[in-house]
Length: 129
Length: 415
Image (cartoon, rainbow over all chains, first blue to last red):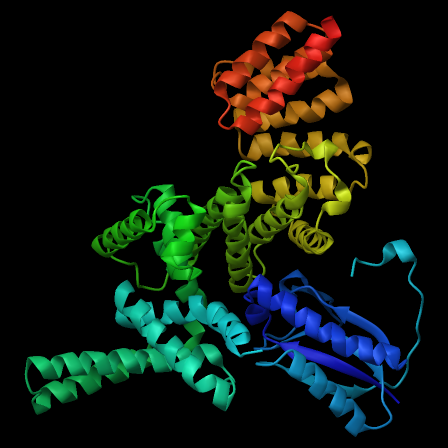
């Protein structure tokens, strides 16, 4: 079964990490990702730019375009992983591995995927890793 | 692995809001700083065991406030035993003050904290040092190192700046809309100053000063979160991100300047560029142009060009013409002339900058650009004179070395 692991945290806090701590954390997270990848369980992974770079289009009879996300919250959606897990327990274990690599504030929402299509982006369109 | 890394991030990010609230509460910068320090110490003691509180900023405000109140009480006790009226007065004061802790004020709190650093009587260097100390939370040692002065000198600079602020009185009343807009403009200018202290540093100082450009970006992101729908704030953030994206390509290994058109574009930071482009796109939708947005739009055209020869100079010329209207300055015209040279040739560019001679006669770049245009027109003797003048005005060995390359080129051509 496919799960989306949605990463929520305070983007202010992440944005205030020292460069060393940032690099260390990314290295620890890469270890978890590598393990999943080797098991053939890792799908697309995305890290999002801060919500200050976001725009929201609100549907309705009169469309509304808003700067930033629709609702102001203490923790923001910062990125996601798509992973293949045999059960919720397995998905929770993966989330725990990620939490161990990146401790402190924040949360992972484990959300089963209903439909998944892996469209291929042209190589030159992909942002740098 | 320890917990200090993430706690440090939470404390740093909460600092402006917490300091802003404590300043409103105590109306004294030193007391607010001490209260914040105490709250941070307690966070470092309790968060590793108990985990982080749900709302770190609110926790720090309350703990900081209580700690400082305890301190006030203790001091009061040392003076004399409090009588009942004193206690009840204190309680009254406390409940009134607690009302002011309303989180809804946080935008004005943060803006005020930034704004007091911009006091017009403070010279720019003191404004910057103060912002780095009280808003960013850099240590005096870190700030001193970035400014290449001794710690004692920086300590003194900051103390003096604080004294001047205390004397002037901090504006505590909530600002009306016009005041708020005014404060925002002043704060934006100060943040750009912080950034430029790092970004404009010469090659040999670029590494030590890089921290200033990074703190500038941290500050502009803070301002953007507080005012997420202000196009000029988006423009400033975009401008700084797009400029700083080029940081690692701007100097060669010896600290010499590498001109934009000669830079290795694969060394530009793609994440910064993506964020900068997103922000300028958002800003333009508001159709309320301003000087930062136009400058960011120019930087965006450079960022979008895969190779230097792909640069859309015609569009850049138009944007500079816009900037000349919004913010008339001979330096803007000088920059425009560089674009004009690309599309209409050196004669047109030279005609554009000749009238600036008087106002820019002691400006290094003016003579550098003029020399290069004259060189293109094959007016070698005049070019040589302009380059000599530029070298005499160079601020750094790197600037002089750059002009000397032109001179060498002239010599080779005439040989």
